[in-house]
Image 1 (cartoon, one colour):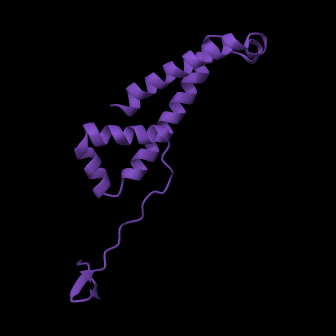
Image 2: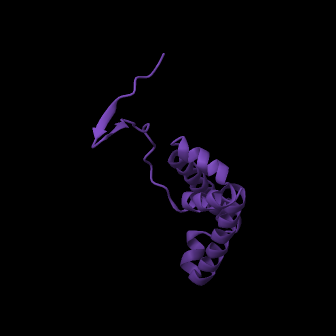
Image 3: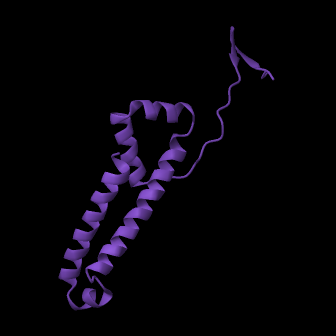
Length: 118
């Protein structure tokens, strides 16, 4: 089955009426943006393939969603493991902030290692 191509006259030229396929329009968050910079720099073939197939935004939105979910789960698990509770927050806020900052940094490092920079 052949696809019929139509043209539009622009001055002296006939230009094909091309239309890109529908693309995913989900927003790309911090994790997706970091992964985008990484694949542009270190995996240009993957980047070009996703871009030319109109799949880049969908791919980045999926990575962003996975990374956000992993990060949230890790922070919750580490906080529970280390006893960072609302009670600690009320009784010793500085200790709670210190522990939570450490937990967030560790979770971010794990997500970066396992998803973003792979």
